[in-house]
Amino acid sequence: MASASDARRIDLPPLLRGQKALVTGANSGIGRATAIGLGRAGADVVVNYVFGREAAEEVVEEITSFGVRAYAHEADVSDEDQVVAMVARMVEQFGTVDVLVANAGLQRDAASAEMTLAQWNKVLEVNLTGQFLCAREAAKEFVRRGVVPEVSRSAGKIVCMSSVHQIIPWAGHVNYAASKGGVLMMMQTLAQELAPQGIRVNAVAPGAVRTPINRSAWETPEAEADLLKLIPYRRVGDPEDIAHAVTLLASDLLDYVVGATIYVDGGMTLFPGFATGG
Ligand code: NAP
Image (cartoon, rainbow, N blue to C red; front, top):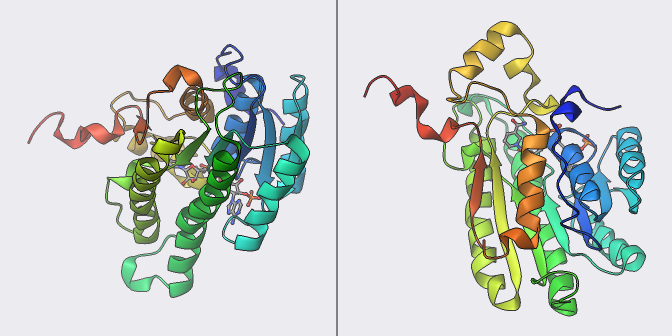
């Protein structure tokens, strides 16, 4: 089902024509919009999901309507064997991988004193280890294949989905903030290590985007008004805002961008509490 924010979509030229993209957590929210955006930009897309098969199939249907290829693949990104199998199947079916968007993520919120080890581990396993496993498998394929100049100037692109909470502490969410802080250093280290092999690793750090992960923060007018106090630009983001940034980062238009985080946050990282004081 098309989301209301589809109306916010801006059509980009086919910047990724002929490229093969894997988007994790692509059946919902930001991953869904990103997978559709990459398909619209000309890429063949693997739509990863873990539980929501029906939603994943709908994303596949929308992507294939652009005349590119797509299929849904069930895999838990925190399971090493499943990630290895997911990338191996992609190489078998699409020939290679050009773009990885390591997007899958979740929250298990609790005050620190109440947080169980299971809550801590689950968030670190999916948000950080999951991104590492996907990046490792994609990088192996990028190195094996090398640069194909007709396709892209680089041997491969990895876009890590981080968050403003890679730098903004977040009470009640210590597992999530730690996972995204980890993503920042993982992304920069991978970028430093892999750039000499022609691989670009970068991150997109969304602020508040209207998706199921943070429904309670925007679904009532009172909650949204509170949230807007944290956003200088005074609007909650749409998944397409993030999809546009990922599409540009994955394309040769931003070929000289390596190891960077693009904050797509309406100014949330500008310390809005200091706008009138301090
Ligand atoms: P969402 O709508 O809840 O989507 C999360 C996606 O991750 C779903 O597709 C889910 O698949 C998938 N997923 C969860 N665990 C997985 C696993 N073990 N293996 C594979 N896939 C898994 O949330 P979202 O807002 O789009 O979040 C996407 C990313 O953006 C996350 O990394 C999140 O931290 C980041 N982010 C979001 C915001 C925001 O305001 N929304 C802000 C900053 C950062 P199933 O549906 O099949 O479970």
